[in-house]
Image 1 (cartoon, rainbow, N blue to C red):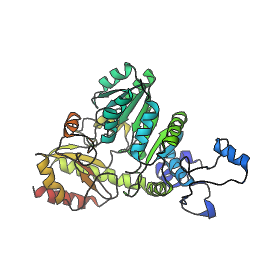
Image 2 (cartoon, rainbow, N blue to C red):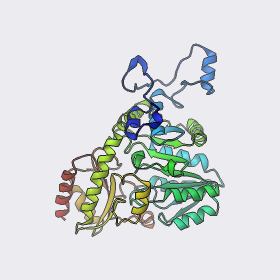
Image 3 (cartoon, rainbow, N blue to C red):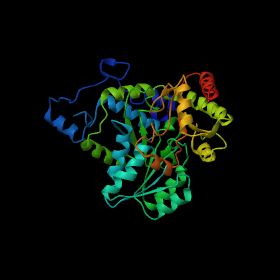
Image 4 (cartoon, rainbow, N blue to C red):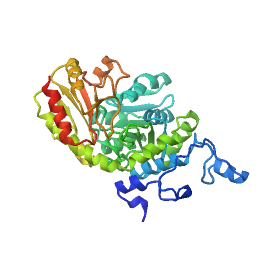
Length: 393
């Protein structure tokens, strides 16, 4: 059976693991070796120059890491994939590969805080022209792209306000301008969304989040067109933001249950969003699965599930947030997201801690916002926990 024709749940288990492992191991071995020895110099040279398959040095490639890269390649139906030590490693290496001095990038205002900082503070230093559009203003995005740009960077759903960007529409505009389209697919995962099928050239994941799923390993992944991925690989090879074998193993192991976890988290997040939407002490709920969400129609068209992340704001300020969060008993008040356990916190300490309050305000992120990453706990228990916490206000 051709692995490319398998369903997502099967790809997540068997991707990169169809060939026998050493000693016929039934699970991916952790190969911690920094270097790989050769007895024949000609064979060594052929591997080193890419003429033959093999491994030379783990900063470049590693057998355990290759398994993980093959899993995401298959899940995203990509030509190639590479990994990084962190999600921000994937984002920064990709941006700095293609955005050299004099280049122009068009993006949105609602990207993850670390990404926003690259756009706002770092790229301008290197004489890169950065234009950030209102996230849901597709007309503005198309207009700015048509003016000329080299790269279009999208994130959908966005972190932490869950805004939705029409990938196919913007990718079509980018193609007319000859721009590369990069999409951060961390929130959606390949279970809920396939940006490459919608016209993107490259897809980025913070593998630390849903892909790993257990908050015990850092990593980033990039996949897409082979020619473009190879350019980023060459940059990362020298830049050195390589993923090590042990976190690669943990992420690949976590991915085996990805479809099961995402299906549960999709369903639970929808129920929780519906509950919060009707609660008198909740001002706004941001979740693309709600018909009242501004991007619901687009999300329904380009996503097969609405994800395990929602955010909501209380009918009050940050002081109310400080009262509510410690009352929650089945939540870790912590940064990150996508874990088997529920995580929650305000953007000022999670997604946009790198930015000032003024920068968050300009990005449309209220200080009263709470990002709630739904775990795989029983949803009735999570609802009861929210009820008791809200009742205490």
